[in-house]
Image 1: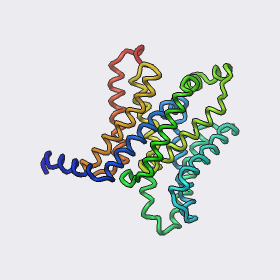
Image 2: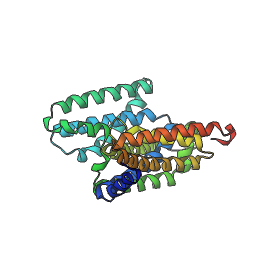
Image 3: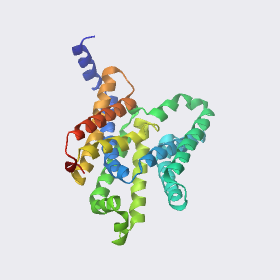
Image 4: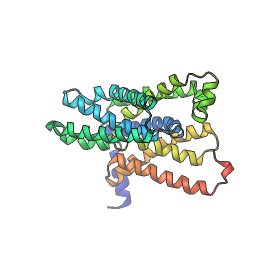
Length: 281
C-alpha cells in the first residue's frame, strides 16, 4: 500500500467520533500526567503511581465480582488505596520501595485471581491491564476535563508551596507550611489522575504517563516553571503522536503512546548531553 493511501486511510479514520474522543482523551490524560508527574518524580513517588495503578485494578476487580460497574468504583477505589498507602508509608518503618513493591505485586496477583472467577469479564482483562483508549466516552472526557482544571487550579494556587515542599520539605515545615495537608491533597489528585488514566492506558502502563514525560522535561528544562509546563506539554504531544502511530501501523494505542514517550526521553538524553550542565535545572 502506498504512502498516500496510508495517509488517506488514517485521515478517514480520524473522522470517526471514537478516534476524535481518543485524541481528546489522550491529550487530557497526557496533560494531567505530565503536570503532576513533574512533582511526583522529584518527590521520589514514581513507584507510588505504579503501585497505585495496580491497587486500583484490585478495586475494580472487587467491583466486578460484586456486579458493580468498573466506572463507578474506579475513582473511589483509587482515592481509598492512595490514602491507605500513604498511611502505611507514614506509619511503618519499612523502606518505601519495599512496601510499595509488596503492594504492587500483591494487588496485581489478587486482582487477577479475582477476575479469573468472573467468566463474563475474562475478555476484558487485557483492557484493564493495557487500556483501550478507543473506548473512551464523552462522559470520560468530561471527567478528565474537570479533573485537569482542578489540577491546574491546585498547582497554580499552591505553586510556591509545592516547589518548597518538593525541593526542601524541612524548610517548608520550618516556615509553617501545612505539609501533611498539601501532601495528602497532592496524593488524592494523583490517585484520581491515575484512576481516570487506567481506562486509556491500562494499569500496567499508567505510571509511564506520570514518569516518562516528567523525566524528559527534567533533562531539557532550565527553570522549575519551564520544567512543569514542558512536562505537561510532552505528555500531551506523546499521546497525540502515539495515537497517530497506532492508527497508521494498526498497533495497540496504549503501548504505542508509551513507546513514543520512550523515544522522546531518549531524545532528551541525547540533547541534554550537548548542553552545558549549568544550563539545566
